[in-house]
Amino acid sequence: MNTVLHKAATRGHANHGWLDTNHTFSFAHYHDPTRTHFGKLRVLNDDFVDGGMGFGTHPHDNMEIISIPLAGDLEHKDSMGNIAVIKQNDVQIMSAGTGIYHSEYNKNKDSKVNFLQIWVFPKQQDITPRYDQITFKPEDRVNKLQQIVSPSKTGEGVWINQDAWFHLGNLKKGFATEYEIKQKGNGVYAFVIEGEVTVGGQKLTKRDGYGVWDIEKFSITADSDAEVLLIEVPMS
Amino acid sequence: MEKMNILVFGRHPQIMETVLRLINSQPDWKAEGAITDQEAVEKFNSNFNLVLIGGGVAESSKKKLKTAFEKINPQIKMIRHYGGGGGLLFNEIEETIAQ
Image 1 (cartoon, rainbow over the protein chains, first blue to last red):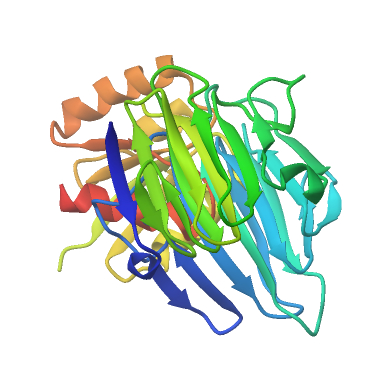
Image 2 (cartoon, rainbow over the protein chains, first blue to last red):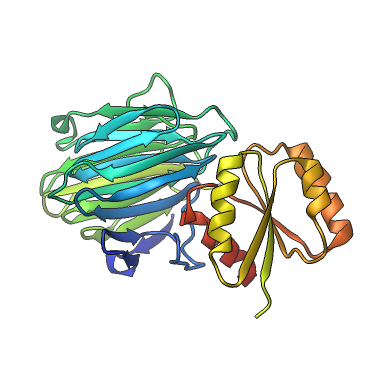
């Protein structure tokens, strides 16, 4: 088993006033050559955006972009004509493909929005841009791993143009389970949203990240009430 | 410090415009863009240190241009650029400079 540990406090951090952001991997002006990606997972940003503020219209191409709001509401507009508000329990995916423009703003004027912005390198290049979002039932991830992203169009969760699976778990203290790698050669990046968990024997606390690969399965134990995101991606 | 001269080659005019603006906002970097293979060949000269390849460029074009560019500058570096504002752009360039 190979592992990599990224403690929360070691993430890149930038405070732009309206945006307080933490970068697990190199992003914008944070550059650490030892932390550029985990397999096909390129970006994991933990963003806090002030009320009414946000990211103006900007382009993307050939990237799978997943947004997971943790608190507050995020308004999305894109060049495909999609206008949507994503909230807690929603998961949004955008396949940038040949190229799109979009903006993301905090829908509320008086409270922050906190969301995870995750970029995964695509399996197939230059596909037609695509947008999707699904609202998940929070009760379906209590002491369970709820699949929120899948490489199968008929699988549970939003479809991703990559051999990747994402799961969310709201685990009560003392709950233990195992995660089996879905595809040989993939690795899993565990990100602790809240609480304390032990993943593959490694104790983790809030906003820590821990990658494991060259393994078939690993254990997950909640050391307190905890929320965890598991991101399985190809390692090459 | 000598400027980093970058040729940005991609098929999407709006993305090109943003990438050029972001690169040219940096004091030590200077970029020009090309949308077509012919335009890229015409613009390329030995002053360029780096070529950023954007979306929509077929492998056949990349190979053809690599051959053409290397005849002019055998040290030229060509890297894939993934659009996304300045999110990855600065990292991609800084990583190449560091190599």
